[in-house]
Length: 212
Image (cartoon, rainbow, N blue to C red):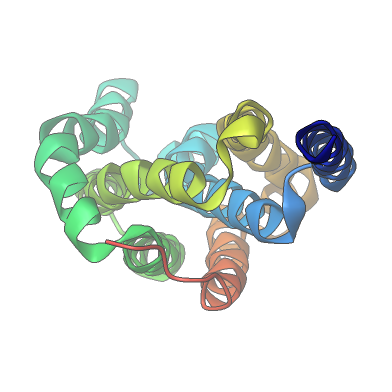
């Protein structure tokens, strides 16, 4: 009888725990980590998405051709492709939050630089290469943060939300054209992106550091 009662109590505890987990969704910590990683990833890629969205205005003002625009955009992808391996290992050493902070601050600085300092296509290419470098560090860091900050039974939901970050970045870049770029200029759009990125940096400071 004692063994039978113990088994009944154990099964009841497991059932209550499963109901609690289902009600909690990701949980407070998991939801905060997922939201931070998703927002940070939007910040990592917004420079290149925004550059593509306002490309006609940039080309007209800085007077460069489509081929030069292609090189500038490619600089982002090339930097990420070349540096993802070594910077992924660096993300493991620094930890998810620290790496996301560095990448977000770099992306904010890139947006501010494009909005104030860029005068020719090579300047834009250099800025986007730096943004690609930040993304090469930030992407594995964000994935690492979600993997460590969300319990295993909820990682499908967490990574599903996390994967929405790039479509969201594309959406925001597209919306910036009629709402900001056509009203106040493409430089203003990058400055707004820099300000929004700074807000994400502040939010990341409240995320619990993950174990190295």
